[in-house]
Image (cartoon, rainbow, N blue to C red; front, side, top):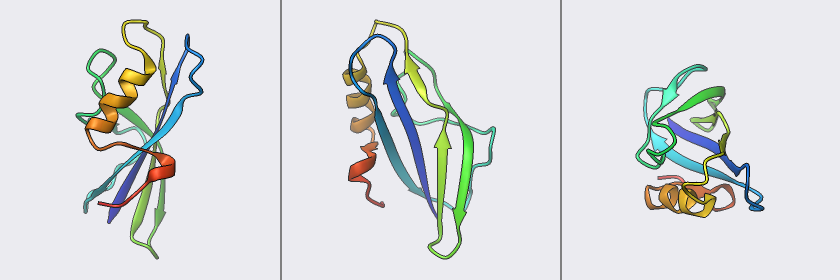
Length: 101
């Protein structure tokens, strides 16, 4: 099954509008609400995981869409663009560029 993770990244102090990022895995294990998802794309200055808040299954397409807790960057140690670039280096894509692995 394709597992599509969806995360919204936004800054509390910058004018950047925020961005929806996605990453897809192929797995027979699907997350459930309350799970904490760890990924090398999550910047270690903030946290090491996002909580699963919603899971939508589509058995007809063999896909699972997983909404993660939105991240609000409140520390000024790192600009939102740097955080987004870190995610992109680790396979996360803007939602409008979504592709399956």
